[in-house]
Each structure stands twice: as C-alpha cells, then as structure tokens.
Length: 86
Image 1 (cartoon, rainbow, N blue to C red):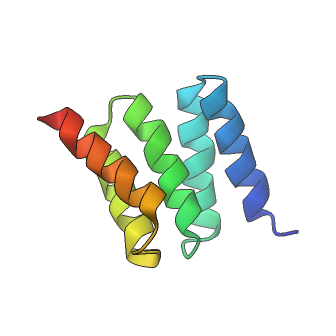
Image 2 (image 1 turned 90 degrees about the vertical axis):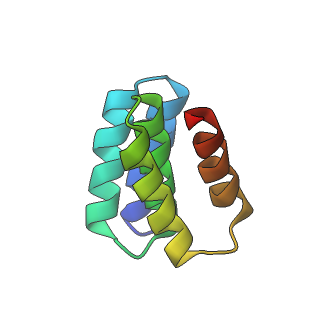
C-alpha cells in the first residue's frame, strides 16, 4: 500500500473529528508527497475551507479538478464553496 493513503485517511479522520488544523497539515503533506493524486488536493481543500481559507481551498479544488476533471464530488465541492462566497 502506498504511503499516500495513510495521509489521505489521516486527513479524513481529522476532518471527521473536526480537527481542521491538523487535517490541513496532513493534507499539505499528502500534496507534497504525491502531487499527482487528486484526492490529496481535494481533502486538503476541504480542511482549508473549514478553516475559512476560502481562496486557498478553491486553489486546491482547482488542482484536484485539473488532475480529475470529471470528478463530480470535486466539482460539487468547488461549486458549493463558490456559492457560499456570494
């Protein structure tokens, strides 16, 4: 099993526990570890959104969508965040 999944699941666990700061730290490490894995960007973006870092979260969602443009979950996350900015 690739180590990237340890970061991804750890990030999700921290999101579930509402430990958003730690989720963002783990998400950033996941992105650094494997910049080609779209879920890393998406989970990192989810943590940043919860921390109120909307612009940075949008950047992460955009990077996730660059790698996986047809992912409906990533598209919905980005659209929901854009709608909440209005």
